[in-house]
Image (cartoon, rainbow, N blue to C red; front, side):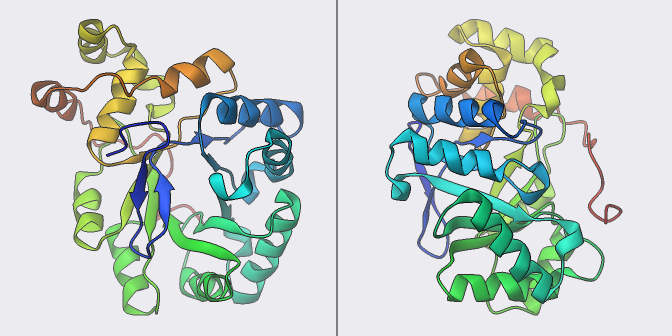
Amino acid sequence: MGKSLQGTVLLHNGVKMPYFGLGVYKVEEGNEVIDSVKTALEVGYRAIDTAALYENEEGVGKAIKESGIPRKEIFVTTKVWNTDHGYEKTLKAFDKSISKLGLDYVDLYLIHWPGKDTFLDTWRALEKLYRDGRVRAIGVSNFKPHHLQTLMEHSEEKPVINQVELHPYFQQKELREFCKQHDIVVEAWSPLGRGQVLDDPVLAEIGKKYGKTPAQVTLRWHLQNDIVIIPKSVTPSRIKENADIFDFELTAEDMEQIDQLDKNTRLFKDPDLFF
């Protein structure tokens, strides 16, 4: 588990990835995403998660360049979208993404959604990008155990990470156990459940003990479960607040209370039905 904002997890291919980063889903291209990323980097974040779908890769790249922080110190993730599945289309999509980012390489490239009967060809393209040194690691997003099983049975490279919807109301325990067995790191998008968990009285009560907000308690719960997190915010104070979770530790009782909040209900699409 990360013990500081720069704490890292060792991916199975030997690459180190920060446990904590900034997500930029629905952050507008231009000044909004540039300012958000630069604020996060100033606070001490060293991982930024974007995607072709978000249409803000250019701003992310500009913020990284303007930050003055050496490129090798920042872990950049982007993703290939559903309409670009397939071997050749994925390679072209990557070229477009890396051009927008203005980078020589990407640290982590993900298949955004499994889609329908197309992810094996898409994965072959990711394997080529990895072999060619254009990406340091490759993984997937929104894959269920059966998707992962199929991928591993028909591929040379195993995903280093699976980025999924995961928060106290949707804890994905079966998927987490599957990934653990196969040395695939789990990463949570929407770790705060799109804000829905923030009004939970259990999280508020736990937070009172430590002088922390429900959001901070939730993010700490993720870290203590060895889950990589990329909370999104465009507000400087919230970007700082989200990162202020390394000066306390939840007890086993706290963790159990949060575990009991699981409703096993998605807030977004089922990957088997979203193409």
